[in-house]
Length: 53
Image (tube, rainbow, N blue to C red; front, top):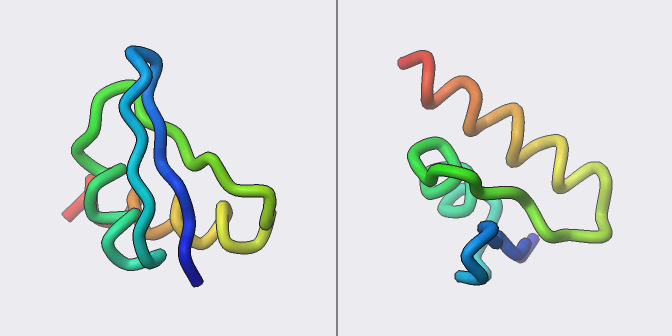
């Protein structure tokens, strides 16, 4: 599933959940800009696991 990421300065990208999680894990002030709550949760959970690795 494709999701969008954004940050406060206004940068935005779209990508698959896997790559969105990788980018979000190391992107300061980033957030998932998706209406799909399940996809948003999967990306946030994966990003959290990547930060801990």
